[in-house]
Length: 445
Image (cartoon, rainbow, N blue to C red):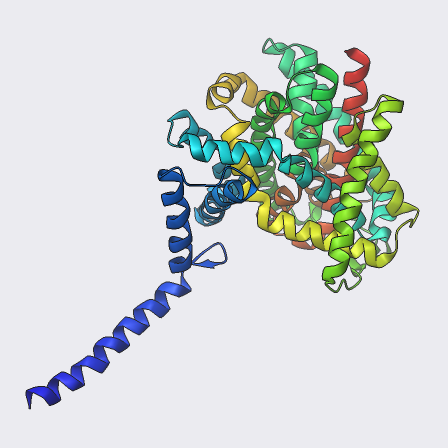
């Protein structure tokens, strides 16, 4: 009888274990099941602990991906933090803090250093994002959207620059520093599409390493993004209290003028062979920029942006090649953005320098830039036949953290359907800002 009882208990125990493992595997860190993530992270940790981590791209990728996946996932889950760019904040500042506390051993630091600096993963990421994001845009949105958003975007930019300069000088910052290291990073289109190309351009003009300029500009971009998200939430509430100011997701009052929102993205089927072509195109744009900079005196990163925009506008590349570049961009931006932020935090964002930069006056300068941008979009709407709430939100996207900032701002305002206009504000507005800022810096240096 005892044996029979034992036989009955054993299947139940195994069933409970199986259910527990199943439930555990349903918990994910990013897209990786928790048990698998724990196993992979343990392998990397032990290799680093015993100084057996390869000091090359393999070891570097292992470190930044293990941390990036975890920190990005936490940033997307924590209340409030998830709505203000949490993944970027954690992925940059947690590793920076860990370096400050000396929690990384030399083996880990060397592996990441080889990946980020000697192998130029940073530049690779930039070239893929610039080429893919621009070539992947809907051409109708590119052409018509810019003409539609031109007035509020330009006036909002001028207002934000003016307000930022006035507040900055009131708090003792020079006009030069305020413009190039606070205002421009906020309206430059985000970290990947704005600050990183800017850091390369600044480095080429001013002579310091790009790491120096990244650490100076990232705090402004993050603070500006937070302010823009808060503004979007407040504008949503304003639209609910005063319905005549809101189009509930419709930007222009005339229905015929909202054709951009109805523009369907052409289907882009994934073709892995064309992704390889897209990789070659992205690298070629970067190399073309470096080559031409020797002759025209403009930093290569800026020439790269201009070349990609011209290629898209003039239809110089086959559609399949554009799709390949776009899919490569989606893969890299989806899978490697938070890991890249970890690498930046470890090597490019010294915590001491960041703490020195941020002060109440600094925060107020950042806030004034965004408020001027949003306020201009709101008040110019009446002259452009636009709804003030929507006009302010879309114009405010110019001061967000790129595509991530657009999602956060539109989510906070519950207007995700306005993404085409937000992309115009962020991508084209940001690219124009990067180009103009670089030209001005070259002129004043």
